[in-house]
Length: 240
Image 1: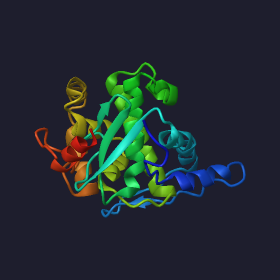
Image 2: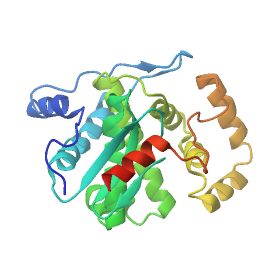
Image 3: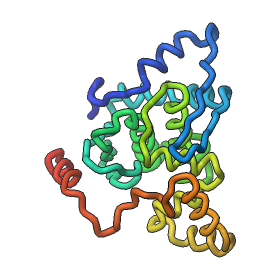
């Protein structure tokens, strides 16, 4: 069971304040975000307002609903939200770099949506998942996580977090599928093979784009399948 206040939700005070002003004050103009290569993203205010409209009640539910728990365990290394996700009964557990508290909300949203998927209730809070394949659902969830982080970075002035910044830039550049298959290829082997067969030049295009934006040949925080994280393993063991 989850108790109010056990999870810190970084966006909540700002979002609640904005919600209280809804109908009176518009969302502030989102600021552009930039990475060290100089590539900028300028989000649209109406688009960010729609993300915030969906996010506000879901954050309240994550924090207050006693039926489930989304647990974040601090670790040293930077990870993608899906890297260490474990779902057991009413609890979704993820790890997050202790030095990146601003990234809490997108990680909580990912764990929450995956838990709702496991429960079979995802379409109640996330209609985009209706009649989707397993990969289609994951793509929709990851796209929503990217938009939540873009909202945080552009409206709430959250600090950069490289794994999520990679995701946002890939989504905005039209490389979301390539990013998912690069970081979660073991989950969607058939879909990845089909996608690459249909788009034979896409891997090279993605690699060249990644080099230009991030000075790396691809996502930089992929954990080897055999890697065991002593920090997160120990934390999970102590939580059982």
